[in-house]
Length: 97
Image (cartoon, rainbow, N blue to C red; front, side):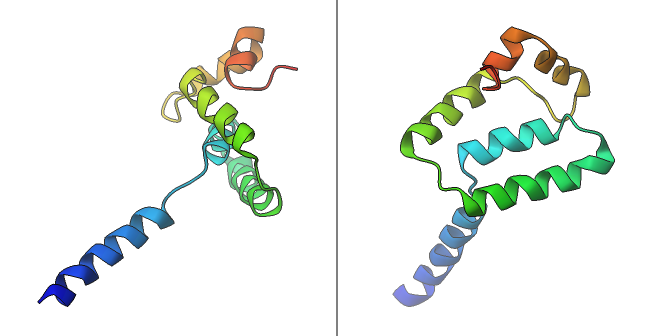
């Protein structure tokens, strides 16, 4: 009986872990929400490729996590992408130099 209870817990844990994305990937995917629909698939593929090839440091992950809180791009409202045209918006989303 104990074994049968552990199996669903294991599958639930694996399911949750499989769906986890790094904060840097989540932030990059927000930018993909702002490109034209026909470019979005390629953008998301580029993000996934970069994530496989570049290992972010703990500092990178912390910076991306902070930008997730300030970057207010909403995938359901394309007008929120307009913030990327302003310096404060670029800074909020981690694009400012």
